[in-house]
Length: 98
View 1 (cartoon, rainbow, N blue to C red):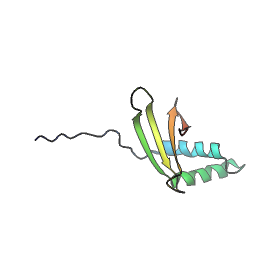
View 2: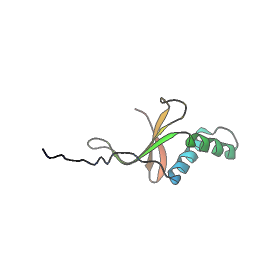
View 3: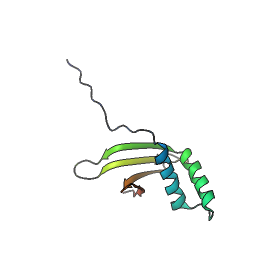
C-alpha cells in the first residue's frame, strides 16, 4: 500500500520580535499596571517574556468565517490564563471568548 504524506500547514510558529513588541504594547495599554507609562512597558515586557505564545499565520474557521493571522497566548500564571489575539487592519486586538 502506498503511504501518503500530508503536510500539516496549521502548525504554529514562534512569534517574531515585532509581534512580541505589539503584544507588550497592547498589554501595557490595556492593563495599565501603574500611572507611569515606563513602568507599564517594563511590566508588560516581563509578562510577555514569560508567556507561552504561538502564531498561526493562516488560521481559518470551518466553512464561511474568519481567516487571518492569530496569536494564542498562555500566560505564566496557569494554563487557564489564556487569550487569543488577531490582527485587524494591521493592529493587534484581543479576541473575545465565546
